Image (cartoon, rainbow, N blue to C red; front, side, top):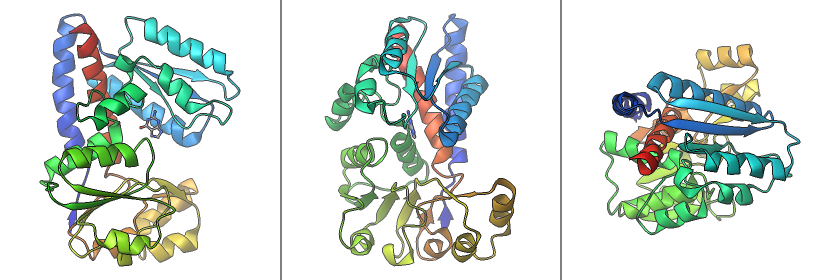
Amino acid sequence: MQVLAGKPVAELIRERLRQEVAKLRERGIAPSLHAILVGNDPASSVYVRAKAKACQELGFAAQTHHLPAETQPEDLFHLISSLNRDAQVDGILLQLPLPSHLPTPQFLSRIAPEKDVDGFHPENVGLLWQGRPRFVPCTPAGIMELFRFYGVELAGKRVVVVGRSDIVGKPMAALLLAAHATVTIAHSKTPNLEAVCQEAEVLVVAAGKPALIRAAHVRPGAVVVDVGVNRVEDKAWVMRLFPGDQERLAELHKKGYTLVGDVAYSEVAEKVRALTPVPGGVGPLTIAQLLANTLHACRLRRG
Ligand code: GUN
């Protein structure tokens, strides 16, 4: 079984970005990413900090706009509009999820499409499905880089995507279709998920449910990508799913939780050809791809 680690792929992307940003900086241009974080969701705070750190390491200019959880819609609209107008701002990222009183689609539509480095604006979603992508959502774009790096063939293959989110499942399906795969999107209302997943030569799981995919779901020899990042606090559950994994138990003891994917790693690993770990699989690629999109945004506007 091959472990599809994300780090070496991310490091290649980061090295390319480092060089290209250095060249732009010689011309007095520093590509800039502005992240908006509303409220104090712990996972979102971790992501936004990781994004800012990656920006610093690669020479991007980064700023985080942290707004209180009770921010009113007009204040968020106002901030987005001012970033849209600011010629120094290349990329705008609105960290999701937003607090429930803020209607996500309206805010995503308000971000200038040429600064929409997440690729969530309807214009960019449309371009992706038309096969002429401008900004590709970062996680699916990173997974495509992973497939390229490890030589995973997609043309003519039966691929099942579990999960239909706007962030991962739907754009993932668009990219796989463009790569000539036969694509099925399964989700929480799909009857007999096991039988559907067993068809998959390549299985991409982005359901947000810890260890949803068990050995019985996978075809022997399949390639499996696990996008899930779930906090699990139950020690008995962890010991059942990760027998003998002392590192994980130590993490649970120290932090009060351990990060677990949507795939039951140990039992699925015994059956498949290749599998991404959690953490260390898809995660590092998402941020690398975000910075690639920010560089692209900078080039689109500033040449
Ligand atoms: N929340 C979880 N994933 C993402 C992402 O890729 N982009 C944004 N903006 N928010 C997220």
